[in-house]
Image 1: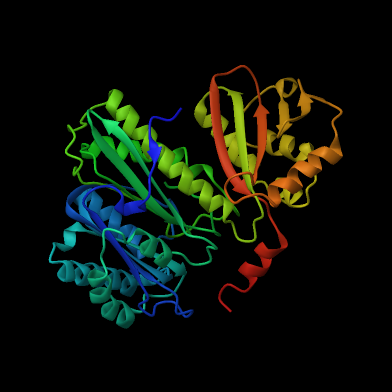
Image 2: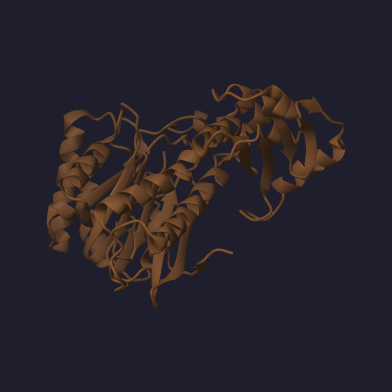
Length: 413
């Protein structure tokens, strides 16, 4: 069993954090569009960002800030305009945003991190942002996580939030997180954003290492449509307000903290995959028997990202041949005669040989997932074994429906 428990509170569950989300007039819809997360003290900060050559101004800004100083007190996120591919003026808007929120909070601009989401090629509506900043600061609250989670979403159908608690020494340590993402999801980081808060004391180098590994096992293992965003950002703060002993090197307590951080990231990642535009179910692919974890994850992500596999799941068609084909093109060597494929409890291929199975029952399994409780029984499990290696990896995706095309065909119109 996990060495932690689920609690309420999202990013404000850890000690010493406040959050807010307001409507500033950035979105044409009039929905909430400006979020702020604030640590009452300077916090160790780590980040993992998109590897796209076309990066939003906020991504460049955050990378520079974290390289200069791996700490922060505030994360400001606007929704509505991605501020990506907006040239030098877009970067100047980012600098102005950081100064404005720093002045409103009475902190240094070097302690501000930024994120944006929305339509690529559109600058932030600065007049709306300027007038919104005093309001979002005034709205800061120790119970403001839900409001912040609602203010960062775009095409998402639901908000995404989680908080967990464990014991380090004899004191509780908490990690909370919120995220957004529904389409343009194929992170290679490290349009998805995730913000994580923690009240442990962790060395900057170790916190960055933990976050990078957690990202690989969560956000870098999901896919909706194969498109990496210009704005993908995962930012994590650790402010030390749990008053637990500092974790400065690898050991049992560091291992426990990283495991809980990974669990938070995986929950948010799966919520993003399940909320894929037009999706009706979550797909979880587990690959075993590979040479190492990285190889297993690569095969799993290739299967989860296959348009043919995703379409078959949406059609409730137990077409295991598409799973085999996706595994074979993942770029990871394995012997075909070792391949095993299961869909749920249905064994379809063993030792590279097709087996007879109940197609109607397998189709019914897929249909049931599409009508089951959200992020509970709505998961289609695909299990693939490729050999006798020790590598195990997971990836998550969603089915590909007619609505995905409709939503994205009308995105800017």
